[in-house]
Length: 136
Image 1: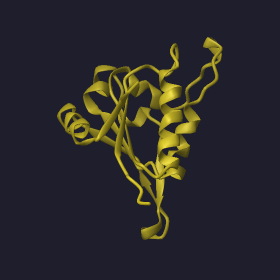
Image 2: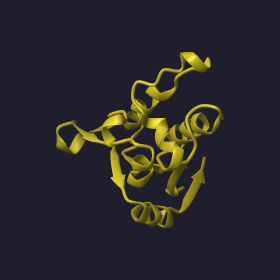
Image 3: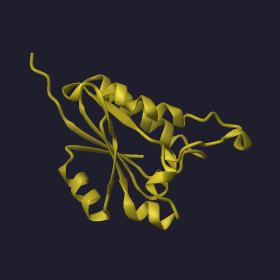
Image 4: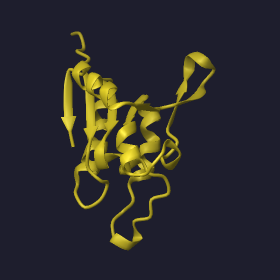
């Protein structure tokens, strides 16, 4: 029995707290990656806030799940795309985001960056290239 590998793109548009979308997206991504699918994450609009480093959720009484993003590399999730215009519109830069990495076994286990900054036009192309797009 042959395995069917699909190209999944998980599109994150919502802020990390106030709804369950961000947490559910992260859970589904990890499940898809565990089943050896071709998994990519994309962060646009308020979804870019999900990757902000040093989140403090004490004031809203919710658990901070953002450290879980650092486990993506362990699940072979290497493609994390952040829309440049969404960051700029919110006064953010790549330096405001968590540093996510994966280890390249073909390069003596060197750590490589997972996050790639892409333009809105490039993001559209990524969505068109995916076989399945889940929007959260």
